[in-house]
Length: 238
Length: 136
Ligand code: HEM
Ligand code: HEM
Ligand code: FES
Image (cartoon, rainbow over all chains, first blue to last red; front, side):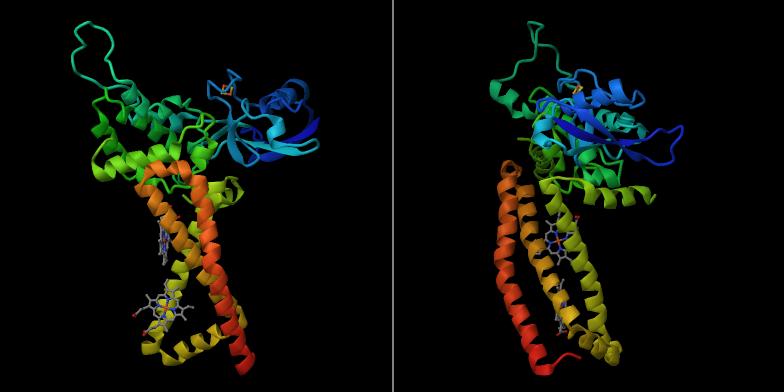
């Protein structure tokens, strides 16, 4: 089938403002949007800049806004978003500085990630056998959903609160904090909650729900944020 | 300083998502009602400080444009109150976020159920008023 790819282009060396360019592409219905972007870059216009690595929804490098909402280009099938002759729009994710075309500067995003202490904190001596700190299957299940994050930024850059204020830690960082706050082996929950109760913490969430819809891993992001809010409100981590 | 604001306003209209639509409506209706409340308090206080201005404002309200405006205001209030209740419930019970799709649908359904008789009564009263008093 034939589709048109309408891509938002921006070259910082020559352009003042981004502009749209449209490319006709011949695709299979079961191709992914990334395949169509490859066709443009490899066969039509080599100057198109985009980031991808695994091409299988694992590395999180090709989050972009496709037909108005954030997705991974490598995960979405053409047949699910377009019919023969349709136009698919592709633009960079929002709220992070555009480096070139579809590539954004992820550093502010990673800074928020680092800010919530995304690592296990446990100062107790190792168990007597010197092996891993055990936890029950139920304790492991408690935070299973938020272990799935691949840091693609689809959620954070779908959030109106983040567009309006880049200082907001954003859904992805809260998901990462949730993953450790609710881990029975961790001991720094209070520190993380303190970070998240600050001005640019969880309370900037206005429950728009875009993050949950955008997450390519199906993480219940808004629910995770709600659970962190609940822990702050009640002082109980359940 | 204003760039993020402009981006947010423009992209809020361009972004696609089901929850996003209700979020946008909630904010627009909330702001709309706040703006009305400001004018309203101003208008009412003029009854004390500047009665002719107060009378003039009341006269303006009795025109078809503002009758439609009143209905829009009622719609904004009803939607905002119903949807606000949904948000408050979900905020207090995060486990219910699993049911977001159902909750948004009910938000819209309950709004429409409350809105239909409201519009009927308000439109009927406005039209009867213009029938007996004529248009100015
Ligand atoms: C078109 C619809 C409305 C009409 C015709 C209307 C009319 C009035 C009138 C005549 C008063 C004066 C009452 C008095 O001083 O005895 C009043 C007061 C007031 N209205 Fe409205 N109103 C309307 C909508 C609203 C809405 C939507 C709000 C809230 C968002 C609101 C909030 C208030 C408040 C806070 C007062 C002061 C209450 C008081 O002083 O006791 N009104 N309104
Ligand atoms: C029964 C009545 C009402 C209920 C249940 C209600 C509920 C809510 C809730 C839960 C929010 C937070 C939204 C969020 O965090 O996503 C909110 C926001 C807001 N409300 Fe109301 N509200 C009511 C009446 C009003 C009235 C009368 C006004 C105006 C005078 C108003 C103006 C606003 C504004 C401006 C916002 C901010 C919108 C935003 O942050 O997106 N609300 N309301
Ligand atoms: S290229 Fe790795 S997630 Fe899409």
